[in-house]
Image (tube, rainbow, N blue to C red; front, side, top):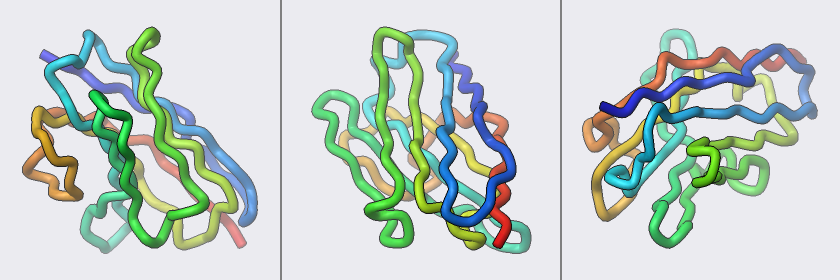
Length: 124
């Protein structure tokens, strides 16, 4: 059973940066795709970024392209999301997730494992 634990959230001013981490409880070799999703109050959860771990191919939502970077450290079994130039509209609960699929999509039901989330608040 894979367990995912996010950390690194917090409160920052617009233009600031945060790095989220997601530690996996075991080697997620069976999870080809790992991703970050977020959910703002009153809104549906949306995909932010994914990484196909065998190749390192990444994918980003248009709203975060050029500002966010997803990466994975296999030695530490940890997924990261570097968030720069943060905007108030980035305020949300951020979740990491893992899926055993061959195409990484921003589709929640593809992902079998989810973390508990970490809150990011960006003030103007």
